[in-house]
Structures are given as structure tokens and as C-alpha cells.
Length: 51
Image (cartoon, rainbow, N blue to C red):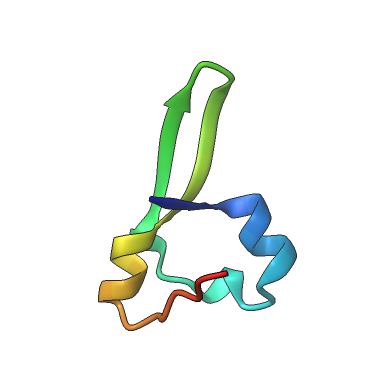
């Protein structure tokens, strides 16, 4: 599971402080997408809200 970088930047004011080692680039049919690995964030001490 991944959190898209544009979505985080729009909805989380501290997105620029997330650990860079959790940032990932994924190739899709529509081109490259950037986001953060959910497991990496959780293992780094971030709690993930469920909606």
C-alpha cells in the first residue's frame, strides 16, 4: 500500500517532513508515480488513520 505524494501534500501539512527513505517511485501504465510506502511510515513511528 502506498500514499500518493500529491494527496499527502494536499492533505497533510507536514508531508515535507516525512522520511525520504520511505519515498518510492512506481512505474505505471500512465507513467511514473511517487508516494510513500505505508509499511515504512508505520515502522518509522507514524500512525495511519483509517477512514
